Amino acid sequence: MTAIRVRGLRKMYGSLDAVAGLDLDVPAGEVFALLGPNGAGKTTTVEILEGHRRRTAGEVSVLGTDPGRADRHWRARIGIVLQTASDAGDLTVAEIVRHLAGCYPRPRPPGEVIELVGLTGKAKSLVRTLSGGQRRRLDVALSIVGRPELLFLDEPTTGFDPEARRRFWELIRKLSAEGVTIVLTTHYLDEAEALADRLAVIARGAVVAEGTPATLGGRATAEALVSWAGHQERTADPAALVVRLAAEGADLSALTVTRPTLEDVYLGLIKEPSA
Amino acid sequence: MSVDILPGPVRLGLRRGGIEILQFVRDRTALVFTFFFPALLLLLFGSIFGGDDGDGVGAARVFTASMIAYGLVSTSFVTMGAGLAMDREDGTLKRLRGTPVTAPAYFLGKLLLVAVLSAAEVLVLLACGVLVFGMPLPADAGSWLTFGWLFVLSVVACGLLGIAASALVRHARTAGAILNVPVVALQFLSGVFINPIDQLPGWMITLASVFPVKWMAQGFRSVFLPDTAAGSEAAGSWELGRTALVLGAWCVLGLLLCLVTFRWSDRGES
Image 1 (tube, each protein chain N blue to C red):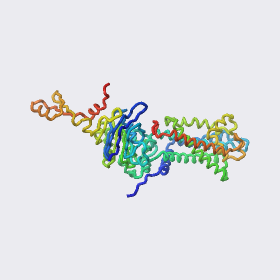
Image 2 (cartoon, rainbow over the protein chains, first blue to last red; image 1 turned 90 degrees about the horizontal axis):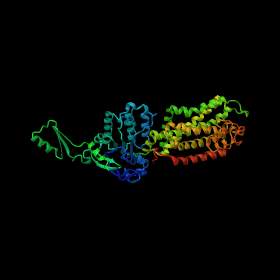
Image 3 (spheres, each protein chain N blue to C red; image 1 turned 180 degrees about the horizontal axis):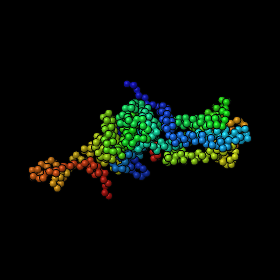
Image 4 (spheres, one colour; image 1 turned 135 degrees about the vertical axis):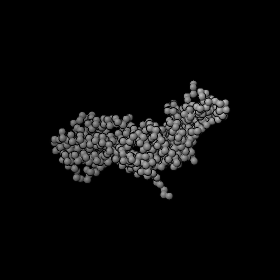
């Protein structure tokens, strides 16, 4: 089953093409990451999928419905983690989670959601006293309390310390294991590599590459760089080169074989075409 | 397996109303400035100008009746306008947009907040009038019936205009200041702070007659003052029919303005 299907999506702001003919397919149950530099059209695309923004042209189907025409029944099936929110400051964590739980037909028990995001010790604290990381985990709690089939996370870990990010990743994996389809945008390549089943790189309003973290942009088949004792050589078959070097008696004490990292591939993909 | 029913707009509106009231009560600044400020003004004005005005009706009683109009503007127009600006800025509206809470449910919640605050505001002002200034409460059902429709029309008109006015507010932290400019100006123009209203220049009364506050204050005076006091009104009578017409017209206009100006986000999108 397809959770998201997008064909020829366009969004114009005045005469500027923020999204210029974008295609996407996300099967149900997948963790899908959208990568791209600032201004590439990630947030605009995600906001169109969430039903927050109108599109200029193109076909969009999210859970079988056009989000531009979606009703409250559709909204009950999706979850959105906001990029920046400072609402509900005068309520406690438990109060706002309980309030939103009551807005859905089949909510998770509020206590269970608070436990899931690791805020049980903060349940009776006012929301405005939470730290940045706790606040984002509350945002996740509020987005999953209605048991969404599809969860959108727009740059969820920006500003997290490394430990908070690891914990956040664990949470995303848990949700994914429950069968929730997850769409996340991120700046962090390690995050995409750690979480995503598949990812797409957006640049200048269109998808420039799509694949798994291992195969994106021909990463799996790209030439490897073999370095030893002050020498370097690029080759498609590093094993053969290493065998030959060993046979020739070269000094291999500092031998390294590197494939391009996801970051190398990514930076190559988003490079502006030189005019 | 049981069929899970999505809560409808009315139920969600009631839920929103509950959470809105809880948040308002927790916000001390809003509680003091929009809720207790009118009572403070009443105590000051009533004590300063408290003498008998010669018609046998104490000025403090006139202030009490008129100040109900100011109290309702404060709890409906200002609360609604500032609350909406805040909800737009802090992400409340954006969050709700992604949930089954629809716009009618959201506004039902806001109107419930405003109605409860307004009712409490009236109680506080009447308590001041009765306990501090010895104002007698009307004993006849007719006066309370008039009070009832005046209250409903006032709160609905001011609440809707507050929603529309929030479109003019760019930053939530300036909302109180911006919204209070027309509010305070209208209190002076409409004879809430200046009693009786016929002390005002004619053009001011004409200008004030376009807006709801003058009619609200006049209406509440008709409820809480003896009929002999009607002579101090601009027209020499209570004009209740015209009051209902003007306030009703503002309700309709306010609703139209809301439908035209309301946006879920501040970026001009759906």
